[in-house]
Amino acid sequence: MEETDGEEIVDLPPSAKLVFKVLEYDGPLTQKQIVEESMLSARTVRYALERLEEIGIVDEDIYFADARQSLYRLEEPVAADGNGVDEAPKKDACCAE
Image 1 (tube, rainbow, N blue to C red):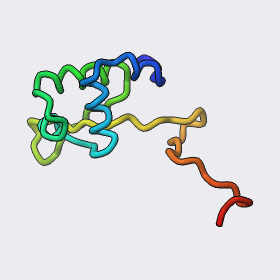
Image 2 (cartoon, rainbow, N blue to C red; image 1 turned 45 degrees about the vertical axis):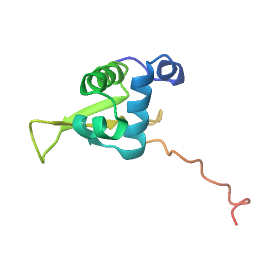
Image 3 (cartoon, rainbow, N blue to C red; image 1 turned 180 degrees about the vertical axis):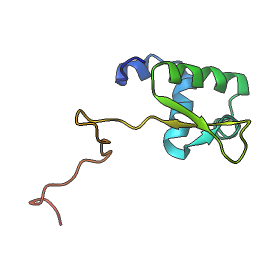
Image 4 (tube, one colour; image 1 turned 180 degrees about the horizontal axis):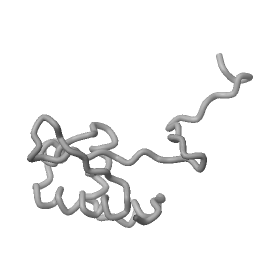
């Protein structure tokens, strides 16, 4: 698995970027749900998910409601200490209202 950074996402095709954003806002989702949300063809979504999985941005899990499908979610960013990374920076005590 390759390291992920901003440049790898920038180099992806537009369909993969759209799938990334759909998962970012609405995930985790099945492939069928991604097709519905993105309005892309199933084949295009499948290709986009493959590209996102190649660079380690998307994780595929079992969808327990229907084991014939997979559930796709964005990988959690990991800090150097092994803990999850907070999305929003915390305000300093001096600046809090």
